[in-house]
Every structure is written in structure tokens, then in C-alpha cells.
Length: 197
Image (cartoon, rainbow, N blue to C red):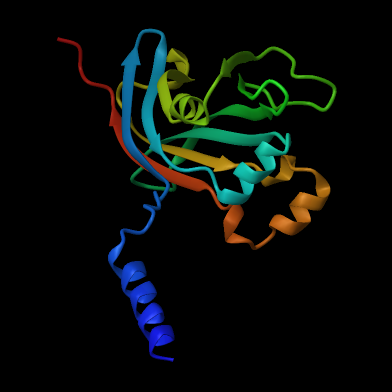
């Protein structure tokens, strides 16, 4: 009995002293807006880990879909902010168990069941590499030059989420209300056109 208590004590003590696996909370760590003659461009850095259930589904060959949205609103002191434009980027992440390769497709239009349409596709050998590509947004054009008034102030909201509506129906039902599928983040930033010198 003494040995049993000693083993239980040692097991509990080791569990308390050893560092726990770090859990990364989803966050948009950087966000930059650049206005040029060509329009308004957004650059950002995201930080997240794939939800455990989503990673398990990917390993079984089920693709995951992600949506990045940038919403531009013109600030008005006398009323609600005026919606200017919403730009959306769609991502499809898949894993091929036979070749052990990851594929990331990026499109400005939703992925249809009949095919991928016109998309940018890239292959990766490691999950860490594909996640690094997903977490980096570089000079994404979110508004044309005609949409931005140099005299106004704007509020830009960036949102990123795992799109559960694209999952197969049995997984959609199982994913409802389960924290193992949660992945969403948002960040807002005010913006005003700098006067030309």
C-alpha cells in the first residue's frame, strides 16, 4: 500500500512540475493598411493552431475550409458608420494520405462542388509550412481607389474563421457546440489617408 501511495504521489508531482503543452490562443498579432493610387491594401500576421478535431479530419483526407473577410466602413459622426466594401478570401486546406503532402488553395470566390475554379494552389511537405503560409497576409487588395475618399476616416475589420458549413453533413452535426472545432479571430483598425507632401 505504501508503494501505491508513493507512486501516486510521484505521478502527481511530475504532472504538476512538468510544463504543460502550450496552447496558442487565436490572435491577429499584426495588421497594417497601405493606401496607394491602386487602392487599399491589407497586410497581417495571424497566430493560431489548428483545432485538434480539424487536424484529425485532415489526416483522414477531409478538406477544411477557411474564410478571411475584410470589412471597410466609413466613419460618420452623425450616424452609424457607412459600409463601403467587404472583400473575402477563401482557403481550402487538404491532405493527401497517399503522397503525405498538404495542398492549400486560395480563391476570391467560394469553392463549388463541381470544381475549384480559378484558384492559386500550392503544395507543402509539412503542416507547419502550410500553416505559416495561411498565417501570413501580404498586400491583399481590399478596396479599389474609387472606394476611398481622402477626406474621410475609415474603420477596417479583419476576420478569420474555420468555415464549418463546408464540412460533410455528419461532421457539421457533430461539430455544433464542440470547442474542438472552434477557430475564429477578429481585429479592427482605424485608417485615414495621409495627406500628400
